[in-house]
Length: 456
Ligand code: SUG
Image 1 (cartoon, helix red, strand yellow):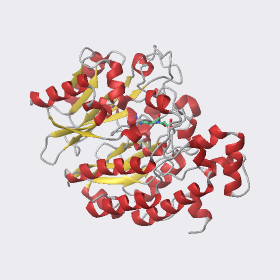
Image 2 (cartoon, rainbow, N blue to C red):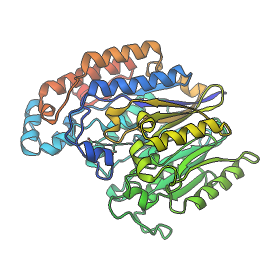
Image 3 (tube, protein in one colour):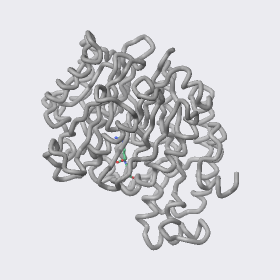
Image 4 (cartoon, rainbow, N blue to C red):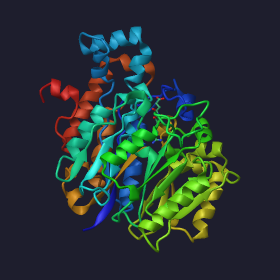
């Protein structure tokens, strides 16, 4: 039975905008209020997906959520027609309308945590949608995420889509962005590395706290995900993110480390006691895979200082295994524009003695200005061929579906969006028309509240 990693990329939604909503995310805090280009954002994302598909890697898409989120605005007391709701929200609480219009669901590394069937006690692929409670605009994502995942991974004999972790603000869970799976190949029994920033219940091993920004991931939430996914003690490792890294703008672990199969690429300031964490991880990896070592690629601060890593988003690169067996780093173009980072990457590839043999740079500026790099835009799902065959075929990307999706974006998306546009009922209509067409293209049925209301 063959097993592959499938990258599910989030399609950027038609209301992509810059609202400065994420305290602790330097790019978001810097660009709030700037005009956005949703069309360019969606096409940049699609170009990355096509590139990976052309490399021979299985690539699929996850649809955006309905925005502005009328259901949320109504739940918060706005009533009347859709246009009334938008008008009243814009007039009385404009920041609420802006938050309910964020296209943040594009960053699907935060959609869920995933455990492949090779690792779980019941032999199913497990998903826990992230609760994203630490930011209001993201906390409204989980119900739609769960509906979408259930529409795609609908065979309950093969897939388990759990409810998000409960517990409110204390038990924040931000999904796969704080989780890395390591294994000799995707099909092997994998080691699950969970990285948290705080303890909700005062766990004694969690001492230091960030001072400037707050942590989004609780140890107790990570542990709950591991239990639900029926992982064992032998294949889970937990480590604390360095508070100094969080204060430097590392709001998720995937801003400071990335792993793939037997490789962990990480910054030396990533964790509390990074050297000990990586040594422990290597021991655990070797115990599971005797004779096969973890390739730990450390990036020292003297080569790439923390602020350069955050600004360039070096570690938010995707690290993928190509069909020939070597690995490629899919990096933001910002890395090519940062001399220290570019030089480091050139040397890494030129060394030739690590699995990382290629680097490809991508222009994802529209997403990057909100702190979303290549790795934020994808959810990795390791699937056997039989599991893959159980999914709706139209969610996969090939030349034909790429061309159809690009044409769909050009038909429905605006080239400029400012906050004044968000109250325009026409924008809501355009978005709904686009999503309705998209669900038909992807073969997903009715997954949005507006479709249910319209009795489609
Ligand atoms: O949650 N930005 C997202 C970026 C998420 C990146 N994901 C990963 N690292 N996996 C966030 O902070 C900004 C929206 C705004 O300000 O308009 C935002 O939500």
